[in-house]
Length: 198
Image (cartoon, rainbow, N blue to C red):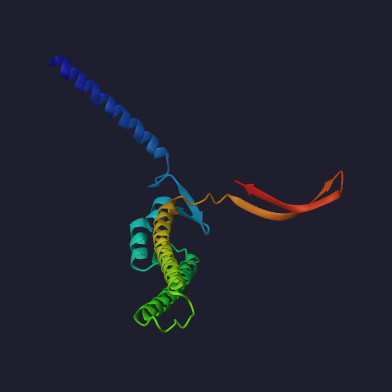
């Protein structure tokens, strides 16, 4: 029993000593809720508070309800026209192929009902079946691509909201400048210099 009491007292004293050391260290460090800060427009913004403003679940939900709204929530407004242009072009092509599919399908069924009358397009039944299959396949491809654009914008909104806390170092600078350098063989050579400073 005495042995257990001694071990317990020793562990309590060690814990108290560690707690005292942590308190001394905590007093010397500035009282910030997070040790990583970044500057934006001359202000210091705590990364944790900055990242809390962009909830990945909200961005995903907004994009699921209305495509592109997750990008607006993440303040990436330049992505919105790209998303809607992709939807517009893919849907336009799907509708065009669907109209051709319906047109030639009706023409094929018309030739099956009245075989004596030639089809208005001049295609045979075999050619019409081939056209119908090709247009249906193309329509289905564009519908699938529309689905991929929808999923891609969902993933983009979710990942972008997650990456808000991993903002770049404000000291990082990239520049591309034209340069002229002397060379021993040709006199001078011109080109571009890509500079990365961090």
